[in-house]
Length: 310
Image (cartoon, rainbow, N blue to C red; front, side, top):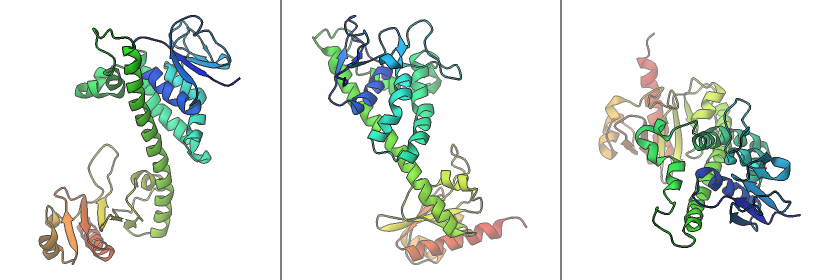
C-alpha cells in the first residue's frame, strides 16, 4: 500500500519533526501531513509514516519516535531525534530523489548526518545547549524555526498548523540548499583535482571558474601551490590559499605594495596593464584579462620565493 499520510504530533513544533517532514514530503509528495496525538493516528499502519510521536522506534512498522524509555542511540552512544532516525532510513532515497549522483550519495549522506543532522539530534535531546553558540544562540536553525510558533495568546483556530507550515517552507529551503552545496563541492573537487594534475610543479593553479578549491588541494597534498586564478564575470581573480579552514592566514600573501590599490595606481606599482584591484588584506586581487592576472601571479610568486629564507 502506498504512503498516504505523514503523521507527527500536534501542538508546538520543533526542528526535528520539521526537518523530518522536509525529507518525507520529498519522497511522498502526495501524502498528507497529519499533526495529531490521537491514538487512531499514531498507531502504525501500512499507509502512514509516524515520526516524533507514538512512543516507539520500529523502521519496519514505519514509526520513528525517540521520546520513549530505551530510545535509540547512535553507535557512539549519542541520542537520535526523529530527524536522525528519518535521515538514517530515508536520507539516501532523498538524495537520489534530489538528483545527487549515485557515487556521491554515501559521501553526502554521511557528511550531512554529521554536520547538520547530528547537531539537531543533540539539541532536541538536551545533549547540546544552544548556549554553546554564545551570542549566536538565538540564531541557530532550531531556534529560528521555533520563532515561527504562534505567540502564547494566539488562540486562533489552526494557529499551530499555520506556524508549522510557514516553518516547513523555510526548513525545506535550508535543507535543499545545504544538499546542493555539498553536491557542488564534490563536483568542484573533481575539477580542481584535474587542474592540479595539469599544473604539475607550478605554484599557480588555474581554474575555469570560481569554485571551492581548498579541500581538493589538501586532499591532493599540493603543498607547492601558492595562489589560484580564475575568471569572474568580466574580469579575472587571483586568490590566496588559506592555511587552515578556520583561519584567514594564507600560505602566501600578495605583495604588500599592492594592498588597497586599484586601477591606474595598481598598474603603476605592479607594472601590469589591466591590474584593477587588490584587497587591503592581500588575499585577493583582480585584473581585466587572463594575461594580466597571470602576470600578476608570476610577480607574486617570484616575491614569495625570493623572500623565503635560503
